[in-house]
Length: 311
Image (cartoon, rainbow, N blue to C red; front, side):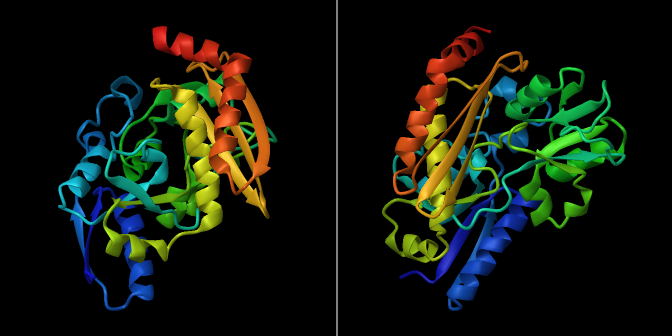
């Protein structure tokens, strides 16, 4: 059984921080293990001047890491689970889902927002986001805002905000918290306003399906309720997308033996948004996700997919 693991990671500050958290957790459980971190530059890291929606976000931040796994260059890869495709390449598996951090989206503002509105920004405020899903939901609830694309790593986007290019940024809470920047959060966006991305807040540890030694190590970090929640979300997205990039969000929440799943799909301009929720046994998360996706498709989702495909 190998006692040395090579961990593949992107080179951003957040990716390195997340990888070090996983390394520290493994080291605590298996003190005899040694580690090597290998930075892999992904397509999403190389192309920084084009909106993600224009180049397609399937595998942009993961495919190069998966190639390194398949070639044996690394033993495991640490991903933000929301970046990982709902269908993995043959020979790879989602080996472990550690306990999920906060799934919520948040606003970061140059000046503290005021008022009771769940999106407490004045009309015309410039809000930066790299996510089609966030932009669609913000436009749906606040069509008076100026929703703009913003690219770059988390620290780069915060600098653009501080330089005055935007009045606010819409970001994931988990990354800010992991970097120790939670004091910058102005407000959390409630789920009825902005459902998070599938897997948001969770890390995904990917490995080769047949690598029993690595799989045994990583299984020690598995958190079953987090796995059940994200399994439902990923099944939802797998059915809903149908090979088409559509603004979609989902949130699974496990309570005892039950799993509540909320899901939504929208047009990019926010003019049409369909939301549904289902509750079912946590022991069968994939069926719950698939059923919720079918409900959305039957109640306006097909029209959304058709317009996105031909738009």
